[in-house]
Length: 115
Length: 113
Image (cartoon, rainbow over all chains, first blue to last red; front, top):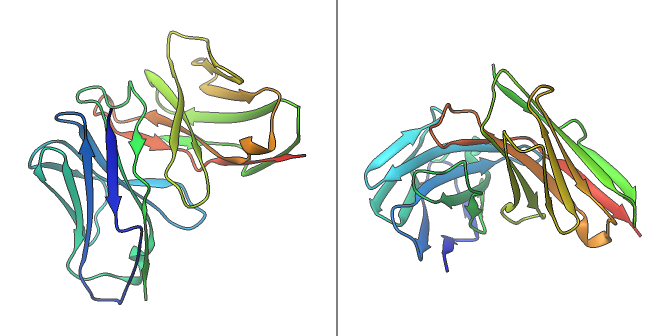
């Protein structure tokens, strides 16, 4: 069966520090991968999605970036965090080629607080 | 612009009653509509998907309807239980087939014993 792992679960980082969040998927090949952010009391905002290794699409301009160095690994990064980067970051996957025809499977999320 | 609106931010309902949540969308005709459940501090969990050519879909105590004319989906939980208390999100692919799902802001359901 397929599983998705996301870490760390919580993170407190000072403004201006770098960020690296990792997400890995097991039990499937060439999944569609997604990074969402959920600010307190707000909906989920799509940040990046990827349909293959090295293929990243950015949805909103920001100081975050994403990479997909391996088929089932998706990394969210920042060189310098801002206070506004605080939020709940969620990684998700969907079967290749059919992202919206099947439900997304989400990881357990990372609660990021920038101080 | 394209929008997804879940009309109620919060809904309180008595245990045993049917909870009905609404999802409206504008300016698009999606091929699929999804519903998720999210508990505090957790990622959303996929519940049901309904296709544009399906009027209704059921799974245990859950029922989803999809009216493409009204651009609306209704999500029903029959015989609601306190364990059903959570935030429920609807989601659509409004990207024109690019497999990117946009989520509504959710409705927080509280089932009162």
